[in-house]
Length: 403
Image 1 (cartoon, rainbow, N blue to C red):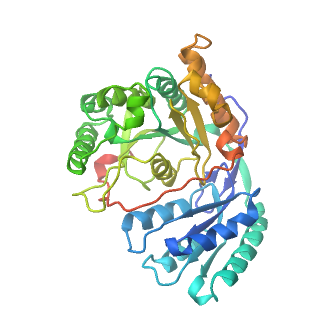
Image 2: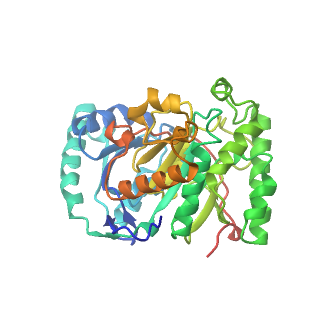
Image 3: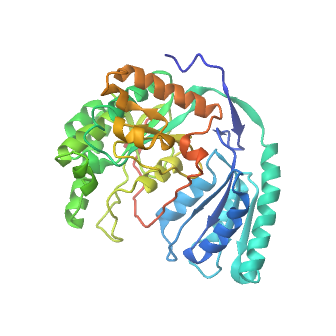
C-alpha cells in the first residue's frame, strides 16, 4: 500500500508554511492557580474544537517554556487564549508575543488584573467565541500525506504488546518512511541493553555514537532515581523482565535507518525516522518519575507530530490535546472489553484473523482517514489529557540531525 496514491487531505496553512490536519483553539493556563478559570471557560465549548492545556508550576523552567511555545504554535492550533493568575514566574508576555508573531489570534487574560474569577471567565469565553469564527478564515490547502509527522508511544504494555501491536506499528512506520513521511519514536528508558541495535541503524558515524549515549544516560538516571520503565502493571500483564518489555517496545520503531536524535520541542529537519530522548540531562533535580504516557505524547506533539500512534496491551483510555491519538490494542481480550476506546485490534494476529502485515496496513489506513478529518475514538470521546512538569535539557548538538 502506498501513501502517495490517496487524494490529498485538507490542510490548514499557517504563516510559517507548516500545515495542520486539525484547527483547534487552545486555552492554556500558565500556573495551577489559573486552572479552574481555564476549565470553566472550556466547559462552555464541549462540542467545539477547544482544548485545555497548561503548566502547573510557578517557578520558571526552560523546558516548560519551550514546550508551551512549541505546542501553542503547533500547526494543528489556530488560536490561543492564555490564562494567567498574574504573579507566577512563567514569562507570559514572551509567550504571548511568540504566539502573536506566528500570526495566530491570541489573548492574555490575567486574573489579578481582570477583576477575579467571574470577569476572567466571561472575558475568556468572549475571546474563544471570536476565535472560533476567526479560525474558519485560515487558508485551506492540499495536505499531501507524505507531509505527515507521526509519533508513537506505548503504554499499559502486557505480554501481547511485543508480538502484535508493537511489531505491526513498526511495520506501519516502515510504510510511512517508504512513502516519505517523518516518524518519531521515543523513550530511551525502554532501550537499555539495545544500544548496539540502535548504533547499527544510525545513518552517520557521529550519530552512531550519540544514540547509545542517550540510552546510557537513561540507565544512569533511573539507577539514581531507584526506578525504571518496568511497572507492576506490566508484570500483572505477563511481562517478566525489563529486557522483554524493552525488546517489545523497541520493535514499534520498525526497521528504517535512524536519521536523527531530538529532544522534546525540537523540530525535525528532513523526512525520516527520529529517536526522541525524553530523559532529562544532568543530575536528577526535579524528581523525574517513571515515563508518563501523557507527557510523552505531548513531547512528540511539541516536536510537530500531527498525530500519535498509541499501542497498548492492558488498555488505555488516554487521548491528548492538539493532535489525534490512534489506539492500537495488542490483546484481543482487552479489545473486546474496551472496543469503544480502541481504533485498531492488533489482537487479531493472535486469533489468526489477520497477519501482522494486515494490521500494519490497517494502521496506515487509519492514519490516512484521520488525516482526512475522521475522528479517532479518543477524539469522539472527548479525551484531551495533558501533562507538563519540570525537566532540564541541554540543546542538541550539530551531530544529532541530518540537514
